[in-house]
Structures are given as C-alpha cells and as structure tokens.
Length: 72
Image 1 (cartoon, rainbow, N blue to C red):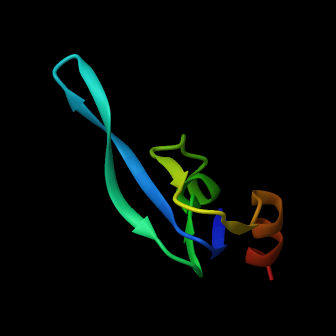
Image 2 (image 1 turned 90 degrees about the vertical axis):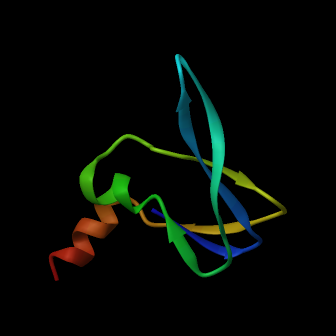
C-alpha cells in the first residue's frame, strides 16, 4: 500500500472498448491519501495505473509489516 505524502497523482483504470482497451482517468489523489490497499489486503493483481502529476513523495506499507501490525 502506498501513502502519498506530497504531490498529486492520477489513477487510471482500463476501459474495454470492443476488443481493445484504453486507460481512463478515474480520480486524482492528493497528499495523505492511500492507494494500492487491495493488493495488500487481498493479494489481488493491480487493477489500475498511477501517474504522478508532479514530483511526489510516498510512504510504503509492505504486506509483512501490515501483518505485524494487524496481529497486535
């Protein structure tokens, strides 16, 4: 899971159009918001693409550390 500390990012998801697909912007994330939690919680494959709109800083929470905190 990623936590955006500074900057802004755009989240894009694939939109199926006939036999093709294209990226469609779904939302903009601003600082102190997270993304990627689905992969952390459910071991799911990534369902979106993230593009930084400017220089960004992130904090990362890996599964092993999440499990340590969850078990407390």
